[in-house]
Amino acid sequence: MNILIVHAHNEPKSFSSALKDLSLNHFLTKGHEVIVKDLFEMEFNPVPQRSDFKTVLHPDYFHYMKEQVYAFQNNGFSDELTQEMNDLEWADLLIINAPLWWSSSPAILKGWFDKVLAMGFAYHPRDKKFETGVFKNKKAFCCFTAGGSEAAYSEGGENGDIDMVLYHINHGTLYYCGFEVLPSFLTWRTHLSDEATLKGYLDQYQQFLDNLDNAQKLY
Amino acid sequence: MNILIVHAHNEPKSFSSALKDLSLNHFLTKGHEVIVKDLFEMEFNPVPQRSDFKTVLHPDYFHYMKEQVYAFQNNGFSDELTQEMNDLEWADLLIINAPLWWSSSPAILKGWFDKVLAMGFAYHPRDKKFETGVFKNKKAFCCFTAGGSEAAYSEGGENGDIDMVLYHINHGTLYYCGFEVLPSFLTWRTHLSDEATLKGYLDQYQQFLDNLDNAQKLY
Image (cartoon, rainbow over all chains, first blue to last red; front, side, top):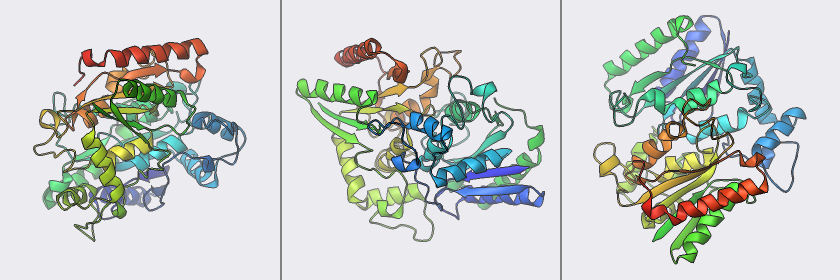
């Protein structure tokens, strides 16, 4: 199996990075192929710009999605984005590994969604989305480290149920592109946790990965 | 009244930009003060980095939120971020004006949230959030142009109810910082709309702004 881990934490010694390393080692040990995209290390630029394309559809009006479709039809993405798209096509499983900032992706990860999940390539709102999505033969899940508590992200909690909070990513982004979306792996308040709690999270993630084949899909 | 419009569309001729201009002119005509932050024009960098701070709390471990708190306590934000924070403090009303990309903010806008709504300055998870939030005397609302249809973003629609989709912004971000969050103004599929439909949206937005004082808060 081919696994793509898209990692978006600025600190290599963070717990999010430790979870990324755990999944990397897990899949390598099992004989799978793994590519890690460390977006901060790559200095991935999340801001849409003309240089994302070798082609130009409308020189006087920059409609990003229309330029994406035109680039897709004319082999016109930048070399950097073409590489990202090739690696995503190669993958059977996509893991999104990041801290949860403002109930969502850090901007650098959001920009990876905005640019790599390009209209034409990753979806088309007319006929390639959800159950007819481009990546319907691939799986995906998120591994987020949240700063809040599990209670705060439960139904009735002050931050709202985590499945509702993550709906815009799990359903609105990953499932929109056709991925079979597995449950997210979440940790809570690791910046305030002691060593035993952190060790417990690593053990839980190992079990989560061991049982991935049996996971019931969210979407 | 002081109004801050944070605008995040890459194309000045876009309909999102027309809505921004409409609100700008509306409030200026009424004698209010308005500042527009055109994040693309400003080349706002949404990626967290050491240069966001003049201070350094932990040189060997970059925990962004802890650096934010330390910078807040020691006047240590970069001049650029200090200016953003001053302008936000100045505002009585914040308008988020952007296209809806992947059921969320464009990355450049997400980065503005990540960096300007800094821990310490805009919230503290212990005691300054929601009804005790820093900006509890300010109002905010979002003006989003969505690529999908209104039906798709309704309850039971394929994209999910828009209030649930936007929960991570309206509740998880704006209300978290204490803002009184007003209903969002939304347009649908404007890239496929004829002139009459677009004119109708501008009229609707004008009415929305005219009636803002009577709007019932979402959160």
